[in-house]
Length: 398
Ligand code: ATP
Ligand code: MG
Image (cartoon, rainbow, N blue to C red):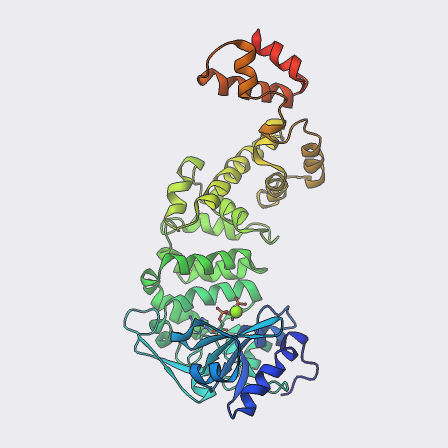
């Protein structure tokens, strides 16, 4: 098959491909970009694979950066653009169910495509649009199937992360996992415990943010992958409840996590301990915990100015919109309007600060100061006091 109108993300790379070919090497677009092109999806970054060895690639192009030379990847800078060019390679002897012990550079495209995870990810395209499909990846795209290249169980034994990749692609693409591949996941799920949590986490969040979240979650639960994810093992029913919510896609990582914790019935006080096991950044854990508290609260109450002030506008609309997952009525525009009408949006907007309060009262600093500032903030938010320096100071003195 030949693609007639190759999109510009690929044609822009043509000069780079041609230089490799002129030097006597093969060069192909590979992986996700070819898959997404055939699915008419937006193309992110195009990956190029070549028969040239890394040193040969570097000899051809004047501007290169070694980004992963031990894996065969060289970054080639061409005009305004940059391309990751990776030498065809095979991976051998996986002893720890993750990452190969050794990668071997080879001259054969076929060998390179063989080591890829799924048939839909093992397609290649030449610079003039001819598709190389050695494992019936095009049929699987038509049938919307995720199928391991070769013997599924063997492939998951080589690299257990592929099992998480299967369920995340199901969610992102709206594909089913082919039976044999699905059985192999079920059989090998325990190997997931060998994989670093950082890598599992990336796939898990991609699953949650996918357009067909339910499809991914169903496989994640039914195959038992969830049993090998931190904090999920004894929570099958609760994960199922998350799976059964509205199919509206989640907006971002923080919302996705907060909703997960909410359905797992994790208390905001325990959220950090839970999320630490997933090795999330402190900032993200903080935001998730805030959203989780507000989600719990908003399910039972209408917004107050104080809550709006505390969560901020972006989180407030996110939380409001999240009511859809609890089958509760919600109004995002009205929530944003109410936020916009707050007299103060940050602590700095208050017409007095600690220094002024100390001067005005003649008292020395102490715990009373924070309490007073909070109190004034609340009264201003609720309209009991106006945000006026004189008025606030006179109230404080009393
Ligand atoms: P995305 O759109 O998320 O980037 P992708 O298919 O491009 O999806 P990448 O993780 O960027 O996924 O990997 C690029 C390609 O490398 C894949 O399409 C696949 O061919 C191969 N690949 C990546 N990870 C693995 C793995 N663990 N095992 C085998 N092949 C892999
Ligand atoms: Mg990619």
